[in-house]
Amino acid sequence: MKKLLAWLFGAVQVRITGAQPELLLNLCAKEGILLWKTIWRDPFCLELQVPHRQYALLCTLAQRVQCESQVQRRWGAPVFFRRFRRRYALLAGLLVCLVLGALGSQVILTIEVSGNVDLTAEEIISRLRLCGVEVGSFGPAIPTREKENQLMLAMDELSFCALNRRGTCLEVLVREAGDSPEVKDQSQPTHVIAAATGRVTHIEPWGGDAQFQEGDMVVKGDVLISGVMDLDAPPNVVLEQGVESFGTKLAHAEGKVLAETWHSLSANLDLNAPVKTYTGEETSRRCLSIMGRRVKFYQNSGIPYEKYDTITELRSWTPVAGKTLPIVWETEQVREYTLTTTPLDQSRGEEMLRQELRRRLERAMDQGEVLTASYETALEGSVLTVTLRAQCLEQIGRMVPIDTQEKVTAPEHPPWRDPTKPIEETQTTEDSP
Image (cartoon, rainbow, N blue to C red; front, side, top):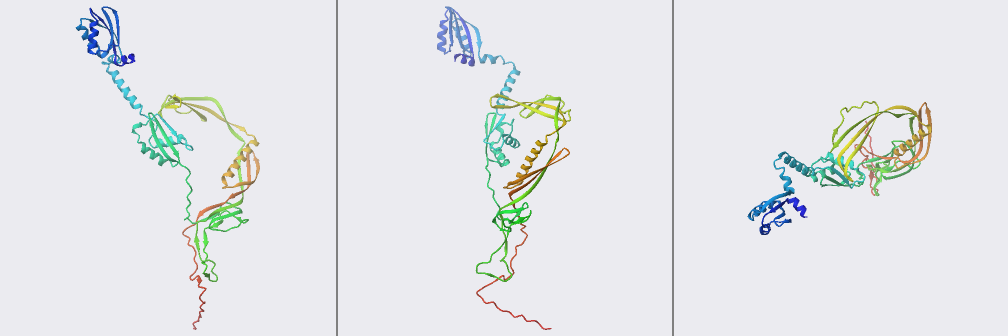
């Protein structure tokens, strides 16, 4: 501890020579001079170690007792910095380094994202960059609450966002929003039409009037469940002869319609596929990226090859495990290649086409399953063609809006009579000419 204090405040080792050096010790005790070390060399020589700030007072006291003082050693921070009192350039450089160090400790060097599940950290950081916050931004100048609101408005997938700055690291804490329930507009009049041709196996109207029954054949575009519904007459009303309904109204038709459908899909593949062959010619280019600013170490940015692959290797500076600074060394390697034709195995190509056709069929169906499937293969030259014919069971009902300009029909007036009153007979006379 004494060594640390001696370096911080500075220390001087002095040799005192005189007839009575012990008188100097009495004066030092009286004046409150701190003596860190006292060594008697002989009865007339004494070595003392005192703080640098009390050295002048010690010399004055030594003269009062007629002793001679001689400096043996000086050390400590005050002595070190005293050497630069006339070196103004060094002092200015030291001051600039201190200012830059203080400001640099407030610059955002790393951005960490936590709390994300479906969204990637790169997507959130990219959207945050569009909001004006990126690596190299000055931390105290970032309006945290404003940027949080901007990020929330820019990404509908987030339900919560918080920005926390810890030194040179910006922590982005997010919570993803769950799937919101689908809100159906029940006020929009609709029809349920057939999205494909098939045979109805099950029809379940949730709204509207079913136009077909199980076992009926339907064609693509047929109205399966109609949104134009007939109105029933009240119980105490009797319709006149020839009037079938009390009128119609527009409704929001919806429901589930399952039908057996038939699909035919084709895909082809050239068995003479081009394959890359590297020639051995390659070019390397290097650059240093500091906080997103690239410093290139090459002059010609053009690529002398017609066909080439680019392989980029990134090496980040990681002084502490798990903490990566925005200093990246990029090595870009460009390799030339040529295309050569290589025949593919027919059985392997056929299997690839079958799997692709099956995926296309499953994506095309809505809540369906494949009942039966057969494949036909044809080879013309080097082109392999595979055709899939499948029988499926799927939901073919699709809701479409009804033109609201279409007016509903209403019965002629009066459409009904009161059954409690007798029918009045009217006599029609013809005018004679």
